[in-house]
Image 1 (cartoon, helix red, strand yellow):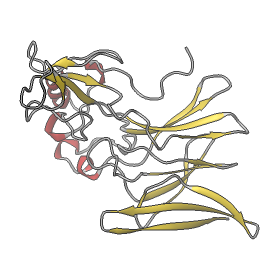
Image 2 (cartoon, helix red, strand yellow):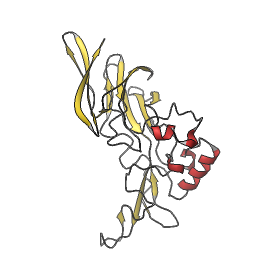
Image 3 (cartoon, helix red, strand yellow):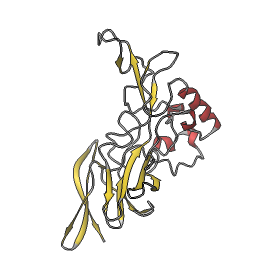
Image 4 (cartoon, one colour):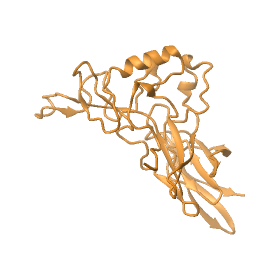
Length: 261
């Protein structure tokens, strides 16, 4: 069936991180504490059969979200950004909050809230393999994937983690959905706002121009804040401009206009 999924669907032990044998063994042990299965595996009862709930991938907030995608009307190619991060979906009894037999939520400190951006992997690392943030180009005429690229860098806390020393994280990606804009030659993307990140450390101020045919980065710059909205483009005086809304905690909201030379 085409097109193929643009991000991982469902969770198995083959999906856990395997940077080192030790990390993989820890990740397998952690994942085994949850109910695993394909996409649409239903929520499970917390602490039933020793399980802490069901691992859902994509997460409760999806692989993609409000950032959506960008479609090139000339080529029929869709560019979509997504994140790879599981959420825990569990049912538990709480007579103080509801007279229903079961409710969804956090019944114990070890159970993340539904859709919570928190890593449950070994040593505070993500449980699932990267890329944690990606951009996929899909040909809508054929249903084929043209390319897939990790978007941005892994968060600093992962790059500086002692267990990651000597590990190649160049294709790990940033755990945030990139707002996208496509033009005749380029695809514009950024680290994203970080306000809706799917994992700790998501988002950032980097903004990129990519070759839309290959996904290769041709230009990269640092904005004064995180990209908080979808980029827009317009012509003025015979010159094309790209405008990006930026902001962050402690950074005033503003618009940044870039000229395309």
